Length: 362
Image 1 (cartoon, rainbow, N blue to C red):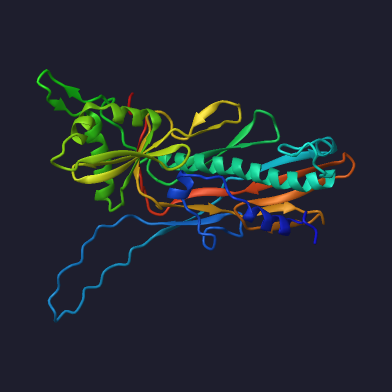
Image 2: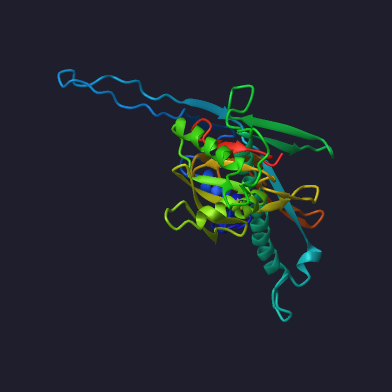
């Protein structure tokens, strides 16, 4: 058995733990049987929401035929992500990270250890890109994927959007910048305009028959809500349960702030302060400042197209998988390279299953 064959590396990378994600896992889960394709393109099915009621009929009629709810199918080409990590003899002759000073590991042992570490590191980077894609898909109702080319500084943008209108129908534009609630000299509180805006976002989803249980907000919006005088006053009201603030850390960058009642509708407030390091080395947030999304879990799917690559037999081979590894060796330069590729795409199950607002503070 050659552990450097792709078929065996596929089995190994599937056993490696994926980096924990929140947006991808909660809103765009992947069914390994249905959502991982063996072709470069993927099929995305989605339908409109429906709130039609059943009609009353007299018994002698028996039943009234109704139309079956239709759906649309789109053939889409996912993004392509390819990363590699070189391995040289110099690296193998030195003590590795975390290795004992008195370790008896040989360069051959280090090569195998490094290969597993490299696959895990490259897979983690892909997970962060998928997390970014999940957020962008909800905020923009689509995603622009910037692909690097073989020319430095030259990129090709691949755009996918999940609406046909000229303007994104899932985007909510506040009438005015959000302001805090105010308290007069007598202690009376006038609620800020943010409350009505969130309710309108929620109501829009309910009118379309879409589930709405989560209020996703950027870190600055979460701090704004925690400091609002009206929320503080309402939570101090012991006569009626209007909400609860009980911060719980769901992941290292997402906190469940609590639940709050918006005119009879309860929303879980989820605050994200997570981010990533961009290609230029700058730190960026998954959710930009001032971002708000009303949605529910499992409203989308994480799809994966197949990866085609040339193997050592100098023939092209196609593999289906969320992560496809490859071992590349160059005898002349005495180097090895571990490559991991992926072809992900986040798609909604129904049309506009989220309502997003951006830059709510103006």
